[in-house]
Amino acid sequence: MKEDEVNRCQIQEWFPKFKSVSIKTIIHQLPESFIQYLLDDTGPFLLPQSVLNEDAFPNRIHNPVDEQDFQVLEGSDDEADETSPPPSFPELELKVKESIVALGGAVFPKLNWSGPKDSAWMSTTGTLCCTNSSEIALLFRSSDSLVHDLCHAYDSCQDKSSSRPQNFFLALRKWYPSLKPDMEFRCFVREQKLVGISQREVTTFYPILLEKKNDLLLLMQGFFNNYVRTRFESENYTFDVYITKDERVKVVDFNPWASFTLSLLFTWDELEVINGEGDDVEFRIVEDRCGVRPGLKTAVPYDYLDTSAGSGWDQFLRNADEELRRQTRSPEAGA
Figure 1 (cartoon, rainbow, N blue to C red):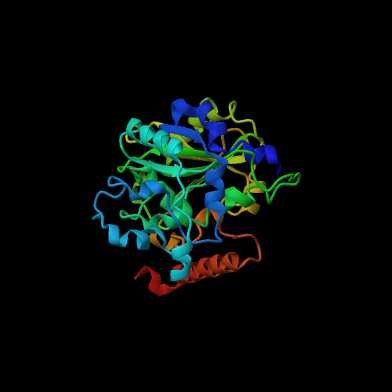
Figure 2: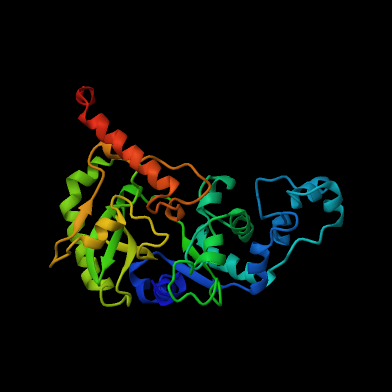
């Protein structure tokens, strides 16, 4: 894999081409000072000055006596006394505020490639839904997964020349509370041919997918041929889609082939040898309750776990698959 292939998967690169068939999104270039703020783990945990505004957390009672404790979430009392004022990014915060309003009042944020999935538990809703810049800063500053974008995006590249892109971007994507996980899919493209499709949420069995499998396959094949195949320049890549109630296909994201991208119900070895002749696409879904994959409760987003051959998670998944097969073969399994 080369740096160009990774760069094409940055949202600020692909979104302009697919805006008409994607989720409403507004993108802002981030100042370097904000990137350094995200990377700084040497001092106390400070949130931007806007977190002190009355409207930053509307359910919070403002108490000046508690203010210093609220600003400094880590560090000793001595460090708290000597700490710098909270960082301030007024221009960025104004742009973010205007964008959130334009997108209906709620967004989910991401950097060039990744979102702060691992810090969703810190929000009051337990999701990535944000209604102001302070909530975005809290999720970003608390996320370990964003270190991938900030420091390791090119680690798998043969021609790696840098540890990070020249510029970082904040993508604010319209929040849709009614999105259903059973209608999310990952599509695998090798040599510019759609060779595989996998259910995106593999920890759950959705009976509706059995009923609509053929129709869904035709929708995604048509979408790839009409909108993606001639617009996305890489030979090998993956892209995620969502299918709406009225059967429109929306691009959610693009990811590099292999690397840190999760292969879901496939293995990368399988995807490398699938023929993909003509319109022959292998579409995999969880077909019964015994076929669900185990949920991985870690601080690292599922897509960025090391599941390569020989890794700890690879062995874990192999053991889990073997146990599922054993249970399926067992006479008691059908009882």
